[in-house]
Image 1 (cartoon, rainbow, N blue to C red):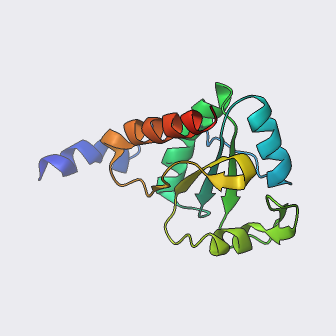
Image 2: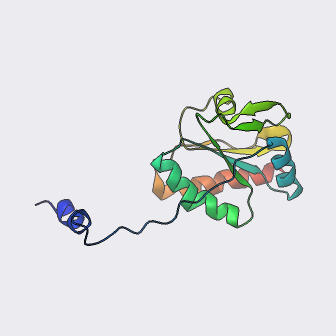
Length: 151
């Protein structure tokens, strides 16, 4: 039996249950213009996670990186691809989650966007989550770029 199989055996026969943190929830915006105004009043950029329902990579990014950022006071929201949930864009026009994500040309999930004044992207998009060892550093680098753009 391979080593990997031996390590998985206790889980497979139900002797040990994996520890699963509760899934974090990021709020869905009603109005991006209002959320951006609140973020800028606090002198912070607005972070927006583009998510795909059921995506395991999205769950990791949300639970391990973005939810803790939100808890520390950083404005972070989530839009879901395929969702017909109503949202107003940065100009106040009615739209849906899916229409906005398509208009922004997003095709990979998760993608984190960083918005500053006038709903302008102020840091490079953080696309995907395939390199977990460096994800936190990439996120921090882009967040710092976004913060500097507000000065």
